[in-house]
Length: 324
Image (cartoon, rainbow, N blue to C red):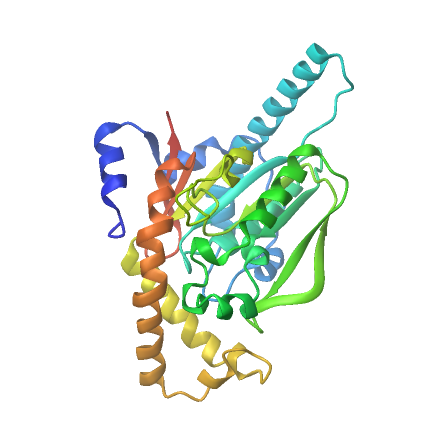
């Protein structure tokens, strides 16, 4: 993609076979007997704004992925049982953590919701929870005090300590955890409101910076990172020109829908002319979201175990599985 960085290009030159690549048709054949248990009505409820997903996409992309993750989860559980037996302690099923990352507007939220539904309908009916890392953004008041409102979504805009504490608690198997709730209407953390997570068998974490290794923005790096507590990572990717177009299309749709709510943080943009709105959204994309993508998000793609390459039609055209 055009947002590639020098480090990413260097990685591919050093390890040209970093990923094994599958066409959509090749990937679809790996579904085997994974059953389709999601209806069109289910998908209608899961779709994001301007982010179409079809039954064909579920059958050809999500079901093979679900089958692969099922194998990974089962293998992880077997290894944990062996380790517990070695240590002479009772066996406990750990939470398997799946990370979904990628650019703003690439469709990772819809991808995560559909994947959660696919995984929750395995024959064993595991419990699956979905957590967006938006809940770990610093409140607007704090961002304003630190001069970071225009850096929202950048690594330094997150409460890294809270996110790490949550993930450590997940790995430790703590019984009930609370995650702050983020409102896209108010564009802020909701005071005194939490999502309760009760030791699911699978936890899907969705967010921009899950594979980062410099989240603190300091010269002294932390000893552990969020990625240390992730079992498998998925990067949803597309050409920058397509992501930009999706972002602008989504902004215009929101301008005529959610932004008309007087309680919306973006209500003041609802009455903009179409030309002014497009100019404003383009400016936001180029000065904020594209900068974050190029500087922070895209460089982490080579750290992901799975890359879902989307085409301009929002459909996944290639799936990459990391070899190394």
